[in-house]
Amino acid sequence: AQSVTQLDSQVPVFEEAPVELRCNYSSSVSVYLFWYVQYPNQGLQLLLKYLSGSTLVKGINGFEAEFNKSQTSFHLRKPSVHISDTAEYFCAVSDYFGNEKLTFGTGTRLTIIP
Amino acid sequence: EAGVTQFPSHSVIEKGQTVTLRCDPISGHDNLYWYRRVMGKEIKFLLHFVKESKQDESGMPNNRFLAERTGGTYSTLKVQPAELEDSGVYFCASSRRAGGGDTQYFGPGTRLTVL
Image 1 (tube, each protein chain N blue to C red):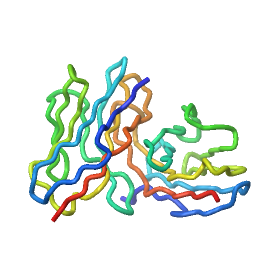
Image 2: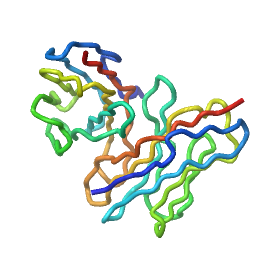
Image 3: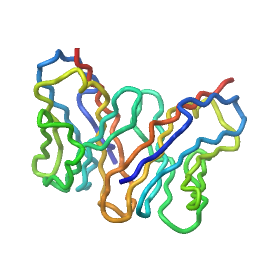
Image 4: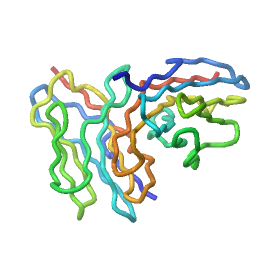
């Protein structure tokens, strides 16, 4: 079984400032890692995912995340945020061995302050 | 390419009533998933269809929930009878492949309120 921890439930950030949203996971097997975003009144949209290879993954809208196996982390970063980044962000994992279901964290609500 | 659609977007019912949620996956996606988010908590897996077969229903809360996928196309999730704790947002997702880190595409969700 896996679990995902997003310690920050809310993160306020000034516009054009950098942001990091933290995600840690626990699993007894290797996992795939995902970040999804939910904009107001919309469904979840994939931002990026890590399957294998380079530990730095680039996604849409200028976001990137780094997989750190030793720290079991997959933090999401953006160097300069915009008002349009206001949304809820979800970290999720699925395992390598055919169990396709996603296990999600509780989400981080990112608020951009003008 | 049309995305995953869900109907209705909102449903308000009284305890003891029946509600049926519908999900239309992306065309050609054999894999269909249901998830639920209870307010303030994480999004939790309910079940996974491959075509019309239930591959994994380990997340279904109890036997008041019944999911079907007719002919491997759209899916319905029926709650009968509904209880207060069933309130939440129900998401449907679909993917072309199962596993291998294939992307699951999510619908906008159905917000269910049980009074």
